[in-house]
Length: 124
Image 1 (cartoon, one colour):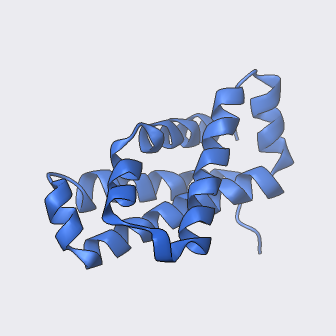
Image 2: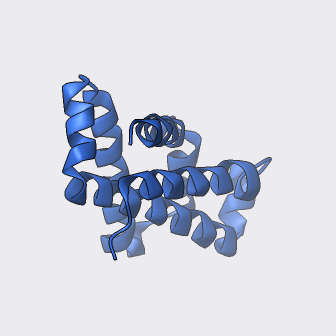
């Protein structure tokens, strides 16, 4: 059974919260670099975000229409970027370093995708 767009938005929000408020809260780059389990946990949550974004973009045309009609192309771009990050981790797993994980979770990408998910959840 397909998961609704609203549910995918909730999955994104939950994964962002886990990264920001549980896994990475107070963690330094050096700590992340020395903790492979933490790197894997964060990557898994980034995969969840990217997969949910992918499902929204590919299967929920109503959601994409909401964004298109509202002139929210930045929100579409945030979903596409999360999908691309997921694809990078899945297909280039051997090239993923702590620096890449750090850059992903300390950039504005997580804040933006969380904002997108919250916006969409209220529209659906």
